[in-house]
Length: 126
Image (cartoon, rainbow, N blue to C red; front, side):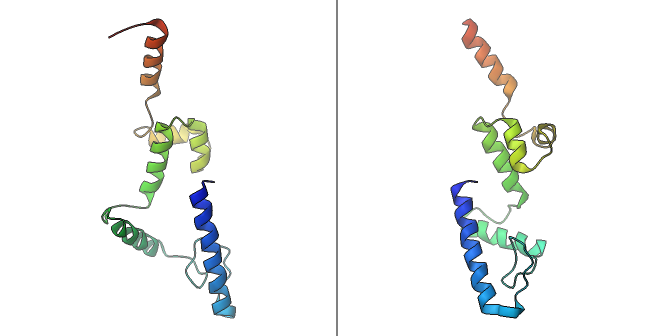
């Protein structure tokens, strides 16, 4: 897990522990990682609104959707050369065929890369 994600989750755990102490028996121990301050599930609409607020604070505008984080992750990992199987594991797909099917438009074009390598190996020039 990337260090910033681990740090954010540790901070969230601390906040939840403080909420648990503050609310006592009124805290719902749902076992959820992402819950409201009383331990209850977060409504999808609330999560979407809070995400839009966060994007606005970051001067990105309010037009972003949570699902776009996943698309960005897949695209950036692919462009950085991470193997498709590993990307599939990180996004929770059963295999890389699912990842390829869903994110084909975002994946680095391996055929183009193969052509460049071929040209370098065999001294071809344009």
